[in-house]
Image (cartoon, rainbow, N blue to C red; front, side):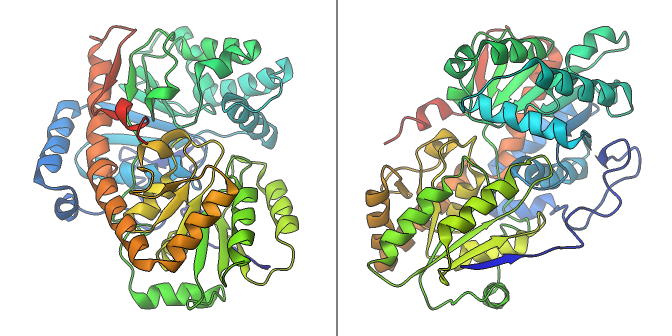
Length: 468
């Protein structure tokens, strides 16, 4: 095993977040334009998404112009949510909107509780205790009583369970005038809630004051919640440092940095060191492929501030890998877009064998880079892969090992699969197009004309998760 763990002075943007959690704010003059923020001019997206989608976005921008929008999440960097915000917040401000971004603040015990909530919502066994609720409530109350929330915002959009508890205190604020929406990025369903009454009550209580909710896929919607529900998948920014085209020299430099042999077939999985990522299955697949042909495995990921489980997972990976020199375990700084981009582009086959996945933006990234991929048919991954056409679904270790070996030994077939996947991602999961949906959902909630039982989709996403 070759393990690399690097530190970076640019893991977090200079001088942000501010003490009140501000990451980006026009009104405060906090508008970073360097790494890890990424923004390209609107016209640069025209050749990628086309004129029609750019016009659709600009139309949506005009409809919400003048509204003050606040986005709240739990981490300034690391993970898919922060990554999307690092691109879309400066992009929307560049288009003339007033969109501010803040991160909540909490102790290690708070993030242990929110990680437990995350795991329980995704179906892991366990109990939600009164002590956990106390820690959660007290932390969010501190954030609410401080200067974390701009109570004069027209729309506040909170991401995932961590900041969700800010919503109930709104009813006690006489000056509330804005609408509050929740953006759920995780894999959850009604059966999981029903199986855990304490968790169900907890979620019902915090969701009740909201004015709307956005889900990544139809199967995540909790239909009985009395609020308008939108189906809007996440997106990637095709021009961000993590997804832009790279020169061969840039790719080779990264491979040299981590002592990876470009001449030996590369299998790769990118993602957080997280219990849901199926890393043990990836290692098993690699061992089976390795027994039949020479290859190497890259496991590259990072540790996020709001995820206390990472170090424990890393230790278990080390034990599973042993001393195999062809396995490269890379613990990257949160802000490592160039490295991840290069590793994905250098790989011959990508894998994402998650057992649960809110959406799976690493799959989106790999397909955008025209890479053949084998991934689990879970969560939003089913919206991105057509089995056997844009990639292969993982059903068993033996089948996946066979598919990986096939792709490594049939490069033209792998190239064709990658090309088809690239076109599909280009048509469905680009930032400008999905931001138009997001802005339209804000307008609909702001105008208060929706039935609380309504489910709104701007595309036939409900059909995509049933594809074989």
